[in-house]
Each structure stands twice: as structure tokens, then as C-alpha cells.
Image 1 (cartoon, one colour):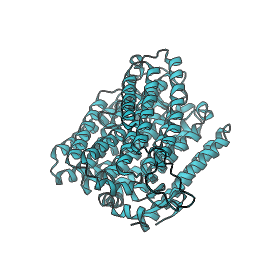
Image 2 (cartoon, helix red, strand yellow; image 1 turned 90 degrees about the vertical axis):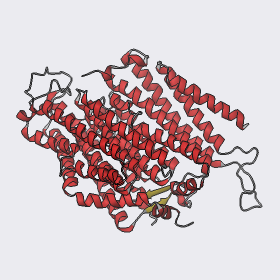
Image 3 (tube, helix red, strand yellow; image 1 turned 180 degrees about the horizontal axis):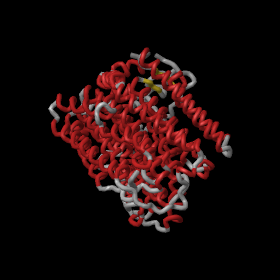
Image 4 (cartoon, chains in turn purple, yellow; image 1 turned 30 degrees about the horizontal axis):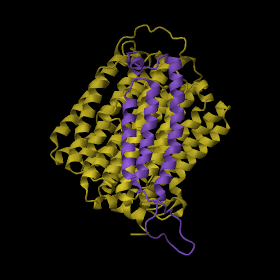
Length: 117
Length: 504
């Protein structure tokens, strides 16, 4: 399971960075989304995966015993997902506006701000 | 000492932002609330600073969960100093916004978002939990995204695409670093991490994580080779927005770098060399970048990069004296950079252009304003006894004491480049004969504005210039504060004890 996740995370990061380096604005957004997902999976993996052991204290016990699934990475991922959801929604709208105003989706042609005013 | 008072600067900005949202359509009421609120925020942060100065570190545990498990907010001298500077710069920019931001932008929620940004900044400075720091960073960037695009001009959108991309990338890198750090230590509390990271035997993995943090914060604080988004975007939004960006946003990155690399990752020789090298090239590339620009705000954007190099250099030298220099420079730079972008905005409002080629004759036409602007320009160069001088003195002293002569050389070169650039700006904008600049229809010129708006713009510049002068002339007091900050940074036991006090 771990090795599968490692490969998946590697693929997500690689694909994300590759997409960011493309010139198209839409591919840029897809790249950022893939990278964000890769980071979330990484948190999940590094929180040490335990199967079938929810962090719930038994009715008879007073504390968690033995190996149990760490709930913190899940809370972190949930926070990160919510944040990246908002940011991605903003980024998509921004790209749409930018495309309408600048009339290109090629990043190489977005150099008006570098010109001498 | 535990006190819920620590989160008041954050809660108060949240309260202001929400209150402003209820006054969505009333422009004048929004302006009033923003200015009065910012004034109250300054008072709160002064009280907090005084309390921490007298009684030591304040902490609060969110939801009363004991330290390494819950989310901690910590107010030590460094945090409260940064909060104080944020609210001071925030007050000035709020007043400046009253004068310079157009009604169309205010109608789309300029002021509420501005206070959300300040909330994020205060939160980042007070966070004692690394994941919480990430969340505050996200609040800062989402607010800054809205501010940089508000108005939707072509240049703004183009700058925003670059700004948004690089900041999202920085967040992902930061999140990756947090993931690995959590995997290594199983903790997120910064004080707890400080203890746990020191115990890890696999130093290679620790260094990799440290470099991930360096990259994440490096993009945000615009160090070489990660700064290229800054000069592409900072000159596009309205002057009030670039003032708060130029003054504070990169400095949060610097604050985070200093905090993380003095508390969690104590740099070994490799990291010291890496940070020093980055600082040196940042100084050089920022300075040389500024040399060839002709747009006033672009010159100042590159100067931000150049001077970020000074602060990182203090971290690279890594002695108490050098850190005093860094903290002093941070104090001085927040105030002066905010003023400079306001000055650029005021010049634009009067003349209708940022171009050094077209500007000229400012001193002849507006001698008093020129004199006022000269204060911030010359503070930046560090002509004694103005504020920039003292900080560099400590940086150079620190560098010489550890024999890091080449970095000292770069700091001196950076100062010289700054001097040259400011001389060029002074000659170009103030002394050169004025030529006829074509009147632009879409610009609302300074003389067309109402007197109150004019006074707001000039008044906020006067306020920050006086602050900058008092940092220069009252350097003794600032040095006292900076020494205390540097001492506690080099000896983080007090910080750790204040946070984990109950369990240790």
C-alpha cells in the first residue's frame, strides 16, 4: 500500500510541475491542482497508514491502546483541501478574466508588465 | 504567562473586516471605520508589546488543549514587535487609502479585504504552530490575490497571474515541508518541534526538510533565485495596495525564515553557507535590477529584493549582533518601504506618470513635499543618523566578528548600489528640468481631489516619515528591543519553556 502511494505521489508531483512549466494558462491551473493533491497525499502517507484501527477509545478503556490511525493528518488534509479549493476557484476565475482582458492564454505573451512604462 | 489577550490583534481585525462587510454600500462609513479601527489596533498592539516587554512571553492555547497537542499562539518580543509594525503601517496605509483608492474599488470590498489581510499578517506573527502558520499564510495570500486584482485592469491581471502562480507553488512547497516534518517528528507545535528535531539522528533528512522550508519561505520573501514574480506584479495594483504589499508581505516570509531557522532548524555550516550565498546574490541581483529600471515603482520593487538580502544576510552570519541588525533592518524596512510606495503613488497622482524619463522638476514645483519625500529616500540609503544606517552597522559588525568578509563586502556593495539608485531617482524626479507630460484622461490628478483626500495622502506619508526619523534618532531604544529579540532568538529556551511550561 505504501509503495503504491509513494509512486502515486511522485507521479502527481512530477505531472504537476510539468504542467506548471507549460505555457498555457489552463494547464498551469491543472498543474497547481495536481501538486496540491500530491501534497495532501504526502501528508496522508507520512501520518503512517494503519488499517482498520480508528482512533476511538473503547467503551471500557480510558486511553487508546496499541497501534491506531493518527487522526491529525486527516484534519490537516481536510484543512488543506478546503483552502486549496478556495484558492483554485479564485485562480480559475482569474485565468478566465485574464484570458478575456489580455486575449491570450499563452504565458509567453504576457509580458506587457515587463515593458518600460 | 498564559493570557487570551494574545489573540486580540487577530480577533480585532476579523471584527473590523466583518463590520466593514455590513457597511458594503456606505463608502464614507467604511473609510471612517477602517481608519478608527486601525487606530484602535495600534493601541492594542502597543499595549500587547508593553505587556510582553515587561512580563515576558505570553501564550494562549486554543480550546485549552495542552501545549504540544492544541494550537498555540505565542507573543514574544519578536512577534509583538512585528504586530506593532504591521498595525502602524496598516494605519498609515488605511489613511492613504482614504485619499487614493477609487470609489469603484471600495464598492467591491477593498476595505474588508484589506483588514482580512492585516488579520492574516497578525496571525502569522503570533502563530506558535507550524500548520497554523501555513493557514495564516493562506489567508494572507488569498486576501492579497483579491487586492492585487481588484479593479481588473489589464496590467493588474497579468501581474496577478504570475503572483498567484508563484504564491500557490510556495504554499505547496511549504505544505510538503510540513508533511515531511510531521512524518519525522509527529508534532506541529514549533516549540515542541525545536526539541524533537534536535534529537533526530538522520540529519540528511532534516536538512532536506529545512531546504524545503527555505524554498517555500524564500518564494514568499523574494530571495534569489525565487524573486522573479515580485518585479512583475508589485507595480501593477493601485499605490495603496503596493504600499502594504511592499512594506509587509515579503517581510512575513523573512519573519518566518528567521523564526524557523533559529527555533526549529539550527543551521549547520552547509545551511549557513547556502543562506549567506543566497543573501549575497539577492543583494546583487536586486541592486543591479533596480539600476536599469525607469519605472519608479519597479525601481522600488527591485530595491525590496536588494534589502531582503540584507535581512537574510543577518541570518546567514548567524550571530547575535547580526540578528540585531536583521531585526533592526526589518523594523526600518517595513516603515520605509511602505512610505516609498506611498511616495511613488503621490508622485503619480501629481504628475500622472511613474517614468523617470518623463518626471522632473518636482523640487522646483513642490519644495515642501520634496523635502518630506527625501526623508524616506535617504533613510533607505542609510545616511547617518537616519534609520537604515544603524541596522547596517550591526550587520557589518556581526559579519566582521565571524570573519565573513565577502558577505560584508556584498552588504557594502548593496548599500552603495542603493545610494546610486536613490541618487538617480532624486536627480530624475526632483532635480531634472520638467518637461511637458501629456495629460491622461483616466487619471484623477492630485489637484482635482477634495482637500480631505489630499491631506489624507500627505498626512500618512508625514506620519511614517516621522516614525522613520524617530527610529533613526531614537535608535538606542530600537537597539534595546532588537537586542532582546536577537538574544531570545539565539537562546530559544525561554520560548520553549513558555509554550511547554506545564509539561516540562
